[in-house]
Image (cartoon, rainbow, N blue to C red):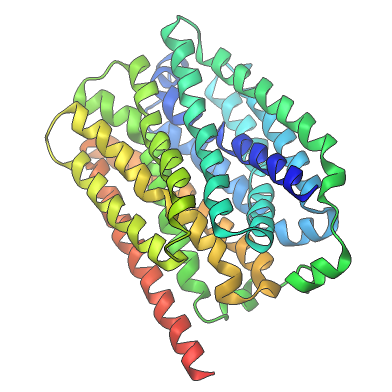
Length: 391
């Protein structure tokens, strides 16, 4: 039964990824049809992120009350409804209103699933599960790009993804009995511990650093995914409909990287995997930055994705080890919120910079975020090491 539940969780991670990259891949077509500004994608992204932050901060209490299974099914259902709303929208205002439930459906499920897997499964499963997120994130732009190049509309693209989400919601509802666990198992993992307040979490040594590392990671990932198509269109002259598919190269890099990371984690521990990821990200950003043409830029997006692959799942998986199983649900919930704040702030900020200066700042912007995030994570490791030496 436990392995059958793992299959369901894999499907849930696919559902998390499916809508995440749609906006960036379709926006070069959408904003012209809607009569909106290029930078307005940042407003939608910020609204989705704001809803996600709120639900992530509430995830600890909601998960303890409803359970990870119900939270997952409810959240995916909300996302499916919001995507259907996107598909029926023909104005920027309508999109903005539907972006609210879109975001609220994501935060709690993300925190609940990540903590559940961190507590109950090995590191390789965390990487492979996030690989499934990448499958969804890479599939979304491919579906959208295929529909656009075949003469369809972005509305049809969103409707197609919504139907897939509805199917996944049905599977999750039927799987609810699988999520029940013996009470002694919950006690052993610390899942029954009292919820922590935000001030209590921030006083934990190393917590501010891991929160900032999450902020920077999602700031980079969100910027890379949202603005990849626009960068290719504006800088390398790629057709907008074709760029929607090329934008998926970043998510394909993440997907392949997380599949490989699952095997590499059998040899390297979480901190080693995270350091390796940061180094590969730097190489990919350099490839996008250098004026070596469209092909190098596209390959660079793949390499950035490969570098992103181990960072997110390995930081999450290491949370119970670094901070204790009794505090992991609360801490991962706030980590998710911090991560989404990065998604909330960075892509809109880059949109403003692209409008005011140039979209050519795309790789430079990512380079600064990478440097800040890597510094925060290395500082975290030093703090944890010092804490353990003092005990």
